Image (tube, rainbow, N blue to C red):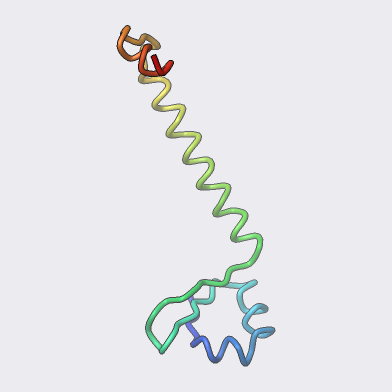
Length: 81
């Protein structure tokens, strides 16, 4: 991953956006504090899809582990009664 300062980003936005199409670009403030990471739209879309897939997988795994039965107290709590 390439790292640049915030002032370099301001001065060379177009070039940095071009570079972000090939690899993530880390933008640092005062030389060391991480402020942002610029990525291509394709990278972002794949990352979001992977997170959504993991959430779906986790939900399916939890659903398989449930027996589908609620106690009377759990049912009342779920219904807000």
